Length: 636
Image (cartoon, rainbow, N blue to C red):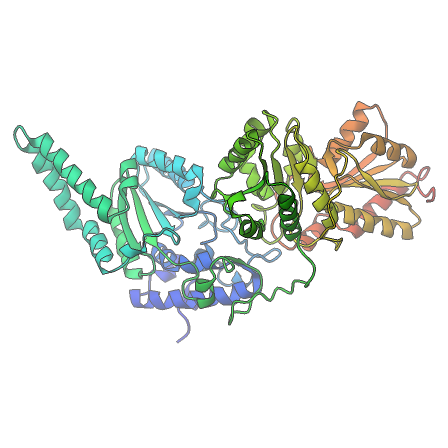
C-alpha cells in the first residue's frame, strides 16, 4: 500500500481516513515537506509545527465552504498540499510555480491572501459578519501564531471580535510563550474537563440556579464568578480572552491530534467567539529544525539529513544586509547615540550581530512596525540616533507614523530599508515595489539608494549625520557587485550629489540603486553598436542633482532612467518633474516596474520577464534612439 498522502487530492479525501491513519499522514506530510523545501527553500519550521492543527481543520471542516484563514502564511504549506496542490508542490516558490503564501487566485481554499503578519483575525471577522448578513451558517476559523499576536492589528481585531458575539474560532498556534508546564497530565485533564458538554451544561445550569436563590441570587452569582476567576488565574491562562468576550479552550497540546480534533469539535458547537490555545513546537518532527528553529524558520536549499545550508552562497561575497549591519556596528562604536530598532526581524535585518555587541542599544519590538517607527521617533526627540531597520515591504504598514510622528516633527530617524525592489522567491507580498514613490512624497525625507557595498556604508554614515529630519537608505536583497565592504572609515557624501561613472555623447543613462549596474552593462552593449552613453549614479532620489541632470540632458539630447521601483511617482518621475519645472525639452525613456503586482521567482528571472535586464534595456534604447537618427551615433 502506498502513502496516504498520495491519496489526498482534496480535503474530502482526508476525511475518509481514520484517526490512526491521520497520524501516519502527519508523518508522511512532514517527510514530504522536508524533502521539497530542502530543494526550493521556504518557511519550514512553522509548517512542521502546525501539522496536526492543519490535518484536524481539514478533517472536521468543509473548506472552502467553511473559511480557514491563515496568518502570515508560514504555517500553510500542509494546507496547500491537502487542497489539490500536492502534485505541483515541488515547484514551491519557483518561477511560475506555487506561491510560498496563500493566494486567492491560486486556490478557492485560500480564503485570504497573506504575507504580512497579524491580519487573520480581522479578515476572518469580516467573513463572519458577511456570513451573518447573508444568513448563512458555515464556520470561520483564523489560525494565528503567538508572534502574529504581537501586532497591534491583532489586538484591535480581538477587541472587535469579542464584542461582536458572532460565531468565530481563533486558533493560537503558540510555540514561544512559556506556559508549557500546563501541557501535561494535569493540564490535559483541566482542558478536557472544561471542554466537556457535561461541564458546560452544568456551568450554565448552576449559574441559573444561583441567580434564582431569593434575596442572595445576585450575590451568589458574584461569589461564584470570583471563585471561578481566581481559580482560572492559577491554572488557566485564558482570563485575558474571556474578559474580551471569548470562550477560551486550552491550553492544549497542539501535536496531540486527538486532543486538537476534540477541541475543535467543542468549538464548532459553541456559540459566539472562541479561542483555542494550542502549544506547538516549531520544526516538530525534524530534529535539526527542533534544535535550531531560528535558522530553519525561513531557509534556502539545505541538506535534509543535517539541516545545513547548501545554497551555494559564494564565500567572501557579503550580502547588502551583512554590509549594512557591519557598517552600523562601526558607526555605533564611534557614536554611543546610535541605536537600532527592528520589528521581529533581528535575523532578517542582520541585527543579531549588532545586538550581541550592543545588547542595550538594540530593540526588537515584535511584529509592530507602527510602534517601531513611533518608538524611534520618541528616542530621536531625546538626542539618540535611531536606525529603524525594517524591510521595505513591512515599512508600508507604518506609513502614517513615518509621516505624522517622524517627518512632521522633523526628527532624525534613519530608515534602513532592506529588500528594496524585487525580493525574489517570496513574491508579491515581499517585493519593495514602491518605496521610492511613497517615501519621496514625504516632506523633508532624504531618499538614498547605493550602487554598491562601499556606497551603502557611506550613505548610512551620511544619513546618521543628518540632524534636520528623516532619511532612508534603501538596498536590495542579496549580494552586491563586489565593491569593498569594509573600511577604512566612511565618506560623508554631500546631500543630493550624483556621480558620473562614464561619459558618452549619444544618451544619458540615469539610474539609482541596484539598477546602476544594469546601466553600466547596458552602456557596454550599446557601445558595441556604436552608441555611446553617459552613465549617472542617481544615488539621491530626493533631493536630486539638478545641475548634473540638466547638463547631461543638454550634452546627450536623450535621457533614459532606470529604477527597480514602480514607474508611477518614482525615480524617473522625479527626473521628469525637474525637466518640466525648468522648461527643458529633452526626450526621456523610463524603465521600471509595471503597474501591477509581480509574482515570485529569482531576481534574474523577474528582471528578464519585465524587460529590466541589460540586454533587453539596451535593445529598447537602441531602437528608441535609431528612430531619431539626427541625434544618435554622435560618438563618445
